[in-house]
Length: 414
Image 1: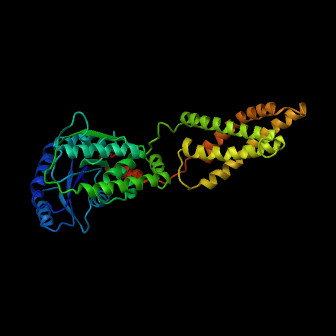
Image 2: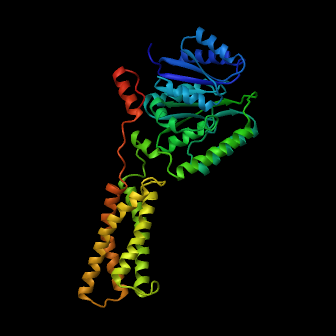
Image 3: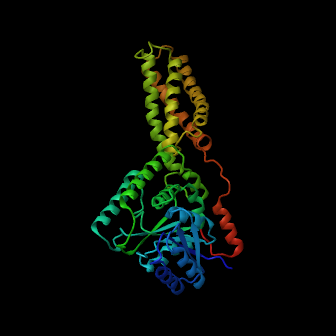
């Protein structure tokens, strides 16, 4: 049987009353408007009523309808399981109440099929969206998305609209990193996509609030806050390999080229050069350390400023966070330090050969000039050696692309 281009997952829990009508409506819409093979997968989240029986009957009557049963609840758990097992090129999901107008489905998935975007979401907060819901839920939704922008730097407008799609190759990259099995799943997926440099397409939707919604708002809010704290800690400690995903997916950050690195390196270098020269002047003048020779002052000041410089460039210029490889980076930087020290030491030795009792101010200027020359060497070493991007193995994305090319399937990506 030919693999579907689109797999629409409908997660359900105790929806025996609404499931039949919703799936038939969705199926009829896809038959009428979607010109490619599709599948509707009803993901039953451990229902205790007749939901599973209704889903089985629909699968028997309608072509392209399938059922997956899970023993545990959780929308995120259901989506993760079905999406990772699906053979479709584009994966989507929507709430069983079909609160979002189905006319938005084609605009949602088309950019993913063409390779224009990686993830697509319906948004109720766009000026072109038409939304009918109470003031309380409107305020909660806007407040939550504002909190995401503040806490996690989210640039997408609506994290929780139950109307999303993702390319299969992207899903295989991101889903193994998503931990939440319930309502925070959507937010976690989108934040990971954004941090990985993936393109998130937003579709304004017409949306009508379901008055029979059984979402526990207070409990969900607490879970969301825990999820936000967890993600902030993980990003701060470098536990989420979004830069590796960015590299595998070929998404280069606009601020990661040579020019951006040079600007950031220059700012860090200027600050640590001031630190180096200040320490040098203080040590040689006797303000600290009781007064030492210029060569000793230079090596001590240079060593301390090099440690600060490496840490700042590691985190800010090259975007590397967490303890991984930190010791190796600092040891490599000490190798560069030896070159820098050699240049500044040679400059001081040359000065003293012609002016044996040169004042501290002149020595500081000479050290500063030598430091500028060594900065070029340091930048080249950091970019090409110390903080060079690690080579990565072929990703699931490349495997899917190769499989699509040989099978004649509609390409899922660029």
